[in-house]
Length: 480
Image (cartoon, rainbow, N blue to C red; front, top):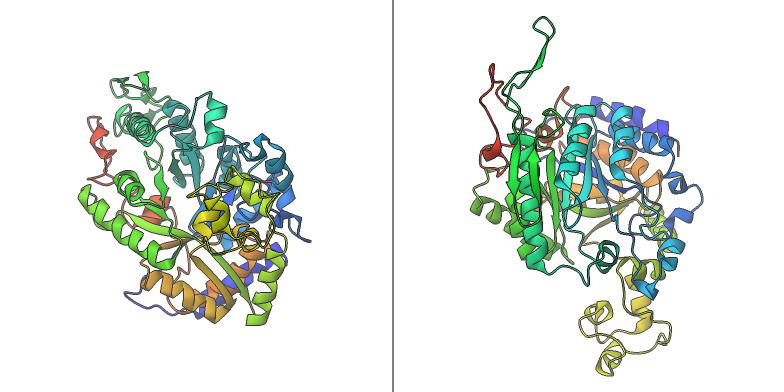
């Protein structure tokens, strides 16, 4: 399929769109990573797949422009900067199957996307378990400037066995450690974004020869358990000041934490019912943190495989599945077990009872009554709770159920094939959602990513923990 064919399809759909007042509209992000695979390890080898070009600018420009033609909210970049190397105590399986190795710096890829598009948001993952909040604040503000307000930060802990090895820790951090470090990391970043430059600090007055008003830039004087900062942000405030904030969580504790800061929360859950329960917990936790109604949205990873007939969609799914690697999935999940010596017919429960498989491990959770062969076949897919395969109408019906029954505000679309997965969504699914009044028919000129997703001003609103750090003392204060 050609990259350029999507524009005409969207234009036709826009002309035919009806407006349904009061109907909840869907937000869509393309789930991406600056690596050879996302989570379906092996699909890059399919005929016609362009994934092997991930280290070349035209690849990202083409994806971004196609996403923008489809009026997506943005691209959501996952990142695993540590490189997985626990499985088989080696980088070999990870590298062989492209299980998030190699992986480029997503902030630099994001700059290519920002330059190639006018409206598309770019959410970049960056960890709090290691690294420096000052460096993160600078990179995120720079991206927000260069994209004119389209940058987002996906907050993650990144606390794997591979992280521990890379950082020289004896073992991964305990929850109380990585939560405490994250709290301090995030708060320092907020101080840099909101507290070190007053609102209205930049005069850019050529006649007076004054760029920044005297007295409007302040040192952040922070001394904490993990960070000491005595200085200001060296980047002036960007259009959003604080980038749009996202965070993923698949547990009750994680949801409660994410609801304190995030504006878009990526919920997990092995089933739709579990995911829907987490959505409800998100909104309850946000209210408990004093967040304003509507200031927190929910999303989930989704698989969408669409065909002009159901059989066409099923054939696509079978083809994609045939390329997915069990070894790649084990490498990415840092499995302590290789499964080399277990026959396919062996019962998992028997192996757990004998101590050959760990209690509570991936196979144990899969089902003690199941066989190793069944585990080999199913585990490689790392299936999602939200998966739609079928005709355009069937897929659109399923997406509406995710919105109305599960409470999702947005979806993060994973790609089985580049560019076919996104092309199919843009050419087939988007027009149908537009026809139903479930999807935008144009971008609003000049809107920031925060304005597009949340529907309020470009800055974090009152009630968000970053807002308390904002300095409003400058001359000619500009309101958010």
